[in-house]
Length: 168
Figure (tube, rainbow, N blue to C red):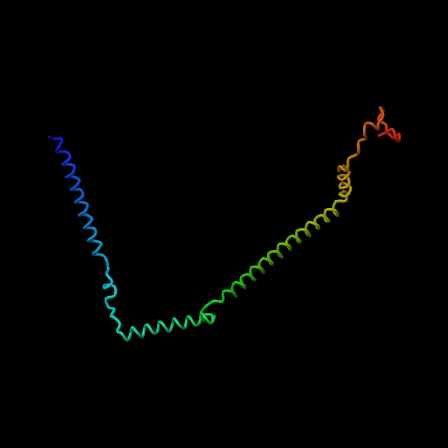
């Protein structure tokens, strides 16, 4: 008999838990509803427009709308508007001039470096009298075009050319 009683106890516990969850949810919803501000509370001092005021407001809105459409159709810029194409052209022109200026500065720096290097080289040449001789010696052992090795069929046993009698 104890086995039959356990499922009933489980079902009763689940029912009780569900009831508690619903009660807590209802209390939370009540708190939220108490804090909600209605439209009436927001605009309590607003009074409804009369028919004359309503027609006057609609006419004014329609007039403003027509003026804006006419202005846009005629292509006239707004009095407070910006001339975007002119601004874009100016920005492009400024970017080009800045780029050209940077290139000029870069070329000028390179020119100054080369002049400084040339002055340093000429100064070294004048201060060291033996420098030209040293440069000539350096160039003396620079490998040039290789000598042709003769074809073995043209040589004799004593390493002489058959044709001219020259010794290599």
